[in-house]
Amino acid sequence: MTILVTLGPLLLALLAGYWLKIHFFSEKFIQTSLTWLTYLILGMIGFSIGALENLPEKLVIAGAQALVFFAAISVLAITALWYTGKHFNPSEKSLHTQAKAEDVKISFAVFSDAIKTLAFVLIGLIIGIFASDSLTHVDTIVTYLLYLLLFLIGHQLQQGNYRLRKLFLNTQGLIIAFTTVATTLLGGLIGALALDLPVSHGLAVVSGFGWYSLSGILITGLGNPVLGTTAFLLDIGREILALLLIPVFCRINSHVSVGYSGATAMDFTLPMLGKFHGADIIPTAIASGFIMSLLVPILIPLFMGL
Image (cartoon, rainbow, N blue to C red; front, top):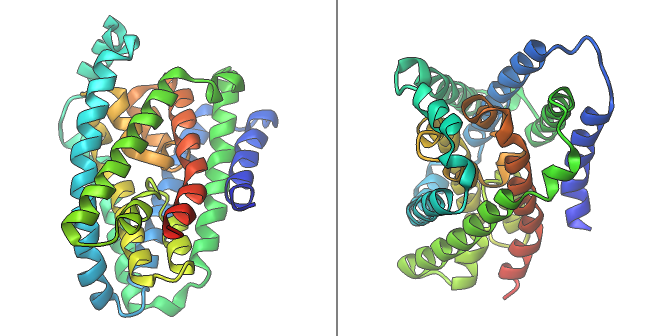
């Protein structure tokens, strides 16, 4: 039931955007809308962090734990995804892909998106700290904005003549998802041992795969608010860092970009992935993100119940 409640509306929004034909939605309009929707959601994310009660205390405990898990996951996942992208993705070896990667120069222009990303989070954070009562039901607003984001992405897929079957039966997406899940859980195990936490808690806290709005709520609702905050900070940090580093990851290979984005590859980080890897990455990103999103409401209650 949890899976249907959380993933069902997201999938329906994507399908509605794919099936409904809105002729005045030009490619430029959709791309601009996706960019600004992403920035708006980032601001909301920053606001929700700034509005947390007892923020300094929670940040000290949960933040320290999140950093340990974050380091373990990042090293393992990036290394493994680099390997799979190099050896199990023939398209990465094509001249077209190599040329595309070389066209993305590491410069201020590339990192301007990353700077904007961080700026919107910080603006939202400051507003949340000093005016937390100015906006209520932030999580609900973010959820509906994600629906809109996926609706527009669905329409973008329709304009690109992508077949839905390829979105969910994608070999590269399966490889990326399996590699990311395995290395993330291994990172959770290592982090739990380093922090002297129960192994089951370590596995649970990393099983959000970047889906901060669900992982923190699930773990907190299962009776561990500090661990829930750790999961929230871990996943939100992973999401923001993925946006910041996609311009760099795209020069390595697509597996690193998509895999490190985790569950958000099917929605929140998808516009950025499409921008730097091209529209061909969309089916792979959606397939990988969908599999990981599907696992979140299964794995977290499973590990917390052990």
